[in-house]
Length: 202
Image (cartoon, rainbow, N blue to C red; front, side, top):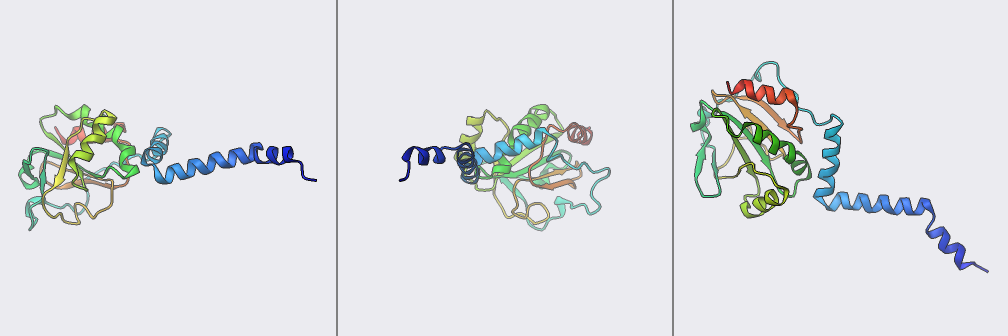
């Protein structure tokens, strides 16, 4: 004769409960971008996802003024910005999407970086929602309390700047040359990165 009480106890054993919780966590990680981005942010706190700051500019610099196709971005008002017209400014360029967990993971540090440099006369921040869904992107930023500016692509863009992988971050110096390029999440609170950007803007 099978004891129903023993069956219930076996179902609710510590190992089964732990297995169930782990399964729920894994499923939540797969389907909920906030859960996955939270995990990545936790890893940032222990020193992962740190930017590799170049000692010197990249060997193969790309001058955006010589691109055959203009690189155009559009803000929420419909105003068009041509990257080639920003020579003389340091341009911080970040590509992201609302559904991308690594993008969400770096947003908190990205927002802090923007706050640190938002009044810098020589540094321009351009964060690009690759889905071109401004309302959805703005809703996410408002919910999270972030204030960095959102742009959409208004033209095609060369692979030298963006090949479709997100998140992606580039910095163009005052001459319009790529001096930093990274694909994947980054911790923008890194002091060396902040110093690198500050030095470029001098």
